[in-house]
Image (tube, rainbow, N blue to C red; front, side, top):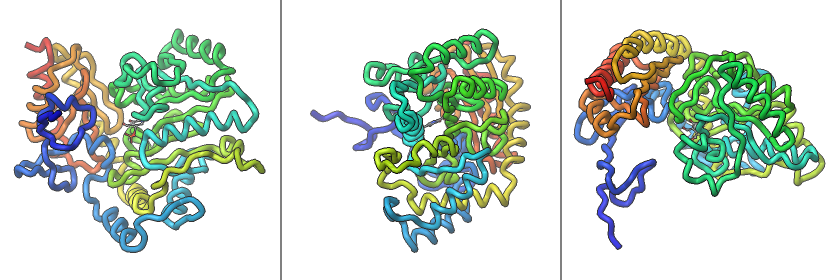
Length: 421
Ligand code: PLP
């Protein structure tokens, strides 16, 4: 059987191949711009799925990767180690709050979440406690596309809802935004305590689930309840890590230290696939044993890839030497000023800004194809999804490019919000 598709042999992400418009061909990137094969240059509003925090092609990262490429692009991590991974682990441990000191490197956000879930499960097994096979997660959450990560995504609204029968069943609660939800969470933790291995949350913002923000107090409540019920808290900072919310890590704003924390995306400044699952000493201690079977049973082939570690170290250098966090806060102010007026547009349900994240939520899902085409026509690369159009630009974006993004979003929202005419 032959199926004619404009995309040739490539199977595209989250895409109905039958109807999809041919993707645009990118030929080069620089700063906050993407150049297309047809000569157009787009201002990038989403930093390649929230990764390119320093903009594209930062010379410091490119130089570090080139040097590492010449020396040792890859070497297996079983039984061997290397300076870029050692330095990265040391630096992450120093930057992360509390005793989040034990760094397991892998190659994507979803895998970092799988490792976190496995760490929590095996921690109980190693302690001789059986039956703790479930995780408590929050409605509206998204943690990745692999099976374990899918099982803790929102089971009803999330993109993986059709897979329910294939996934381990987990316990879901609403974020404790008020007294009733807090009581419900407390009750669920009490009811399921002996079957729960961990609680998992995206701190301060549920990203792919709809750019839904919550105040630090909500995160602090979750951390407090998890602690009270003796459960490890997994903070999925894959989206929020590295300045996106205005602090280096979102957990800092709530003053909490999760037991396990996941990082990826901006870890390499958006240049290379790398992820880290970082555990507190109490978690690590459960694996510290005379028993070889108590070792963490995980080891991706490309874990701790030296090129990716070199990129991550160079990215951390930039956080030390360039003012990323104040840039994030300046972006927040501009996004708030530029997007807030859209609250008054008929057909707009909400406008949310947190750090370098700005989201406009429509009252009804718009025609995404039309919205995307209109954004492109305005010379910007912005990818609305569901009922959301959002901006997560590079933290290095200049005022002129940021204003172009804001104007483009304001323009399409005003013209195209369902119910606006
Ligand atoms: N967790 C969160 C919070 C994410 O936003 C994502 C990706 O968007 C993931 C996990 C999965 O990461 P990856 O796409 O690298 O597997």
